[in-house]
Length: 197
Length: 376
Image (cartoon, rainbow over all chains, first blue to last red; front, side, top):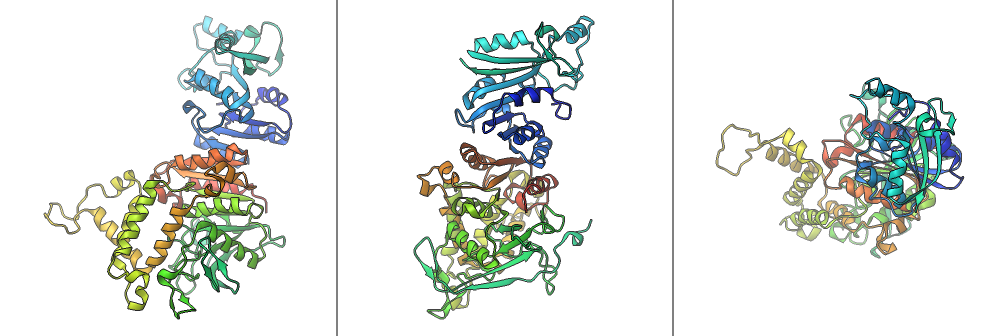
């Protein structure tokens, strides 16, 4: 998890939340997004597995629940939150469909951001015979926490199969600038707002 | 960094006598009663920096520091309470109290019943966690503390912190609930029952009035503690600490102490039975059995915790099987259900239930990190 780096997706995510709403941030890292949301009057809880990041979130003064997302969200009630966020974490998880279904069980809306494997630089790297290392995929193949590599098209296909509605999509380049044209080619990071179908 | 540098130093116990009757949940009353307590740090002008430490089964008011005339008698949670420590006495005014029914100076079974002139013994009222909370609130009144910045406890102490947040929500800003459970399981109660039976069936128990016979049910209390002690440790830790090691190499084909673990348990039992009061042990275990803050809310813990206004830190330990992490997660789920501010940390530790007393750096950082955001 690239918790220390600049997070352009946070601004997109925060812009979708309204004051007074409740948020569950899955894989919340050190709680940076929750700090940002708290400043905007949005109450949130984070879920994090890593002990060091849990401590960092406690030290940042946000609500954090230590739990492993791979085990689902059993402790959380149906419809408990306005938004459930999974920011740059989906690609690190094995139980992809389970977590997406769980998000839309406990939340009215799911917000998912992930690095786009089909970003042109990544394609170029693979064409050149190497695994991509970029702003949004900053790891070497041997030390990456990522276990799922997928593209905007792949993700949207899965959403359709699972019966989710894509309410909004923002695609960013490596500088965090919004991409309008050819998002699956020019976009490095995608942020989706999903609802139940 | 030495222990002395971060100690509150020499401390003096204090005593407060309440002349108005204390009414127990059972309906029993104490016409007059006393609490012993200790305080560390300074109460600020706004009286907004007070922290209450609630003790567990065998704990008491001597939480930190030592006594000038008994420097080896160091408080039971001295590793976490002190200047610059996680419960920082440079910021907080920390209060430790011996609960009603205790055997360390507060009114309890070994105190004199004014009506008979003899110790209360078995006639001392059965006390509950809500009783303790009300008694502690009267101590807070006495100290001029309207609202605790935090109420903190481990095990049975954590249960008191939880009860505070439900019963007197306006008087608690934060509750730190460590190695606790929302109520006991049948297995927990069963262990307590065996411990009590050991005491109750000791020929020296005399129906709880052993004081007047000049004896103490030491054998029963020793067995009770040995049993309890097993539940405080983890299997891993016992394997590591004792394994199957014997005091002699070969089996002696006897029932004497041969395995190291036997020797250890006997030592712990003997040590405890020398100073603890058996009637207090009965009361404390019963308070645990009865603890169920959800009961008045139809068994709905979330409905009970909906009363709370506090923020919560809930901490559990991986090898604690007495109050396992899953029990803490029940508390957390109930808090989440009513959208309370809560953080939950499950700490990897080898020390079983007793982990809450161990000076583990990560555990202490979590408590310190949480309390750093508690406004004074």
